[in-house]
Amino acid sequence: MGRYKKWFIGSLLISAISIALVTCLTYNSETIEALREIRLEYILGAVLLHAFSYLIWGLRIRALCKALGHRIGILKVTEIVISSTFVAGITPSSAGGEFLRVHSLNRNRIPTGRATAIVVGERLLDAIFIFSSLPFAFYIFGDVLSDYKFDAVFLTANLLVFVIFVLVIYGVWKPQKMKHITRRISGKLAPFFGKKTDTAISHLMEQIYREIDHFHDSVRIFFSEGKKGLLWGIFYTFIFWTLEFTLLVLVLMGLSNTPSILTAFAAQVLLAIIMIIPATPGASGVAELGAASIFSVFVDSSVLGITVLAWRALTYHMNLFIGGIISLKMIKDADLISKINGDCLTRNSE
Image (cartoon, rainbow, N blue to C red):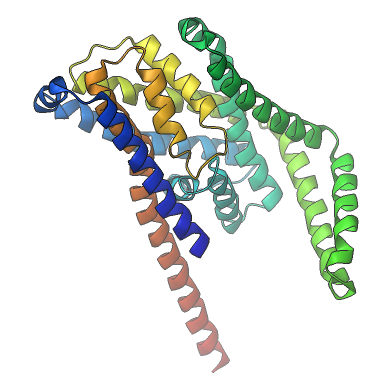
């Protein structure tokens, strides 16, 4: 918990400093006037739209679960999604969110291997959507991206995601090879833990092999009898990202700017690639400064800082706030269930 607390505080500080820096560098007399004329109905609309995106995300996971023969309530799966946004917001590259969703699905009687396949599946759908949108984004921002610094950032992000994608595909295609690699790694590490841990390591490896088989079987099902669920997953992925990209459009309309929807969407595709780089918890600093650089192409400098602040508040700080509340609720519910089970066992023993 200590590590998460440090990540949480650190991510908020980095985000606040980055936003303050952008705001100070772009502040002028027109900024005050823009704040006076802000149209709150558009900002409220953006808040409601982002809240609705949680439901769409939940429907996507539910569709993928159903494709594998597992049924889970929409309220429960949406609760899982929202709570995972909090952990994702305080861990590098949002990695903690994926682990929490796998764990939460497993607690709802979905085998770990299949839960992993579901979560990896939704991440792959996101990656396919974003990367298939890249040619469009590069076309819109062709002149901006001629800078070698931008080229280096995008090349690094693309290379990282490509390597991960290849490893996942290889693991699906050759599960026995993955088991062999895992066995060799554990063999190399075992001497460092001593002979007393041999039984525990052996048990752990058996569990890992079992989950690799679950994962492989799940992917096979997605492309056979689970095709319908996969198609629904693709549909919900499109809706989800459309909603998320519309937030910036609503923010700009609230600041009395008339944005080009295509340009705003393209900017956020590029920003999504930048934010993949696991530099800071929740991509704090990277997201704000990256947004300021890309948004400056089509946003007036007088409202650039406010735009970055509002966009980040919707897509990041709102996740931390609502996700934190839901996470606390889930912890309390789990404690209550444990207490009830404990009371029942005590009564039965009597």
